[in-house]
Length: 532
Image 1: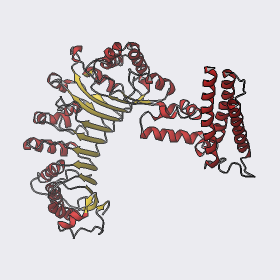
Image 2: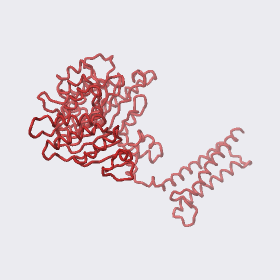
Image 3: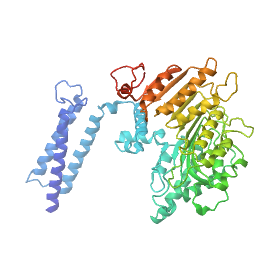
Image 4: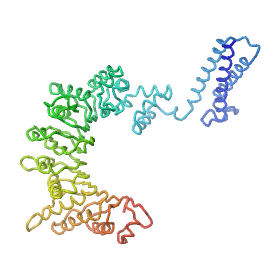
């Protein structure tokens, strides 16, 4: 008796839910559902299905509510299952009229790929929306080529991405493979009885080496370091480059000597670092933030250069480990040979101890620039406020090290420092016409300058125009806000207009007008000027 009453109550509740959902179709704005009972509707087949389904629900309700009904609980559940099945079929039929379902598969794939750029692992969510979307997502390998930092040995995502990406090139981000504590990944997995997950993930990575298009690694502790060391030792014996597809590498790490003790929990030793770069003949972008011990830095001058024939962009960053002094990325320049390097970016503060190493980093043994092919130069926070003499050495070296630059971007205090270095370079010759330190320069971008910084640039421009016959007219972009001394900055901006084309971005015009900036040719009534 209890089972029968329970089955009836459950059936009535589900019937009411179905009936309410069917009522919504009466006013649904989707094609084929609005005014669905209207005579002459071209979607008459859908209207007929809706009427039939509503009738089935009403019939089932009457049977269940009939006190004289002798239907068993099993019969009630069976009848309810039939209605549920019909409801699912009807929903699929109605959904087929939605715009998103009428799009070609190729367009849906493009939408899914764009969603993947906006949010990590969106392909997993997309594959759970509907059977139609799941079939498209699972059978589109390009959606599964982004192995982000959340895909670690502690979950089962890597095998899914490995198989669904087929044999396409992949972007592997291994920066979060370590556990949240200082316990290694292997130990963490073992404590959960998941040791096999780590071994499986390592095997899948090793099988994917030739498919890596981008690789990001950081200060990962022992297990991944052991894996990287194992694969890097097999690289020299490989008949073909192990990372032939690799075009982008980002390394944020503490490197150690090749003979260091494994108890130090390194990312990988310097030997392995060299092997990874040497096995990447098509590497185009390299981002480095590395720290080396003194014993290794002392031997770099005797290390053979790492050949990077396809490298076009090199970026030096601060190391992410706050407990480590990041004073070593400059030393790595002395180990690289990149004849096609076009873009050089430095977001790295050097220390006074490194000043004497600048020659080896920026110049060859014969004194010629190490990277003469660089045409785009970006400096951001490279000098030291309290080490004036070292700043002079550094920025003077930068001017001489990149003689063929076309586009230069400077931020904050580097603006004034480099302006002074350019002025010293142009004043260095005795008598006659001075040589232009950057004769190919066309574009100069200055971010968040102060009045003093712009003054140094103006001094260089003035001496350049006085000492050089027919100097190249430049294009300036100045992006605010100003750090200080707005009145002096306004005067410098006016002076810069005489030497080139001036573009201002995110400059508060009210602040400029209050500083007596009426002479600059900018539109009135705008608080934030994008282009002047």
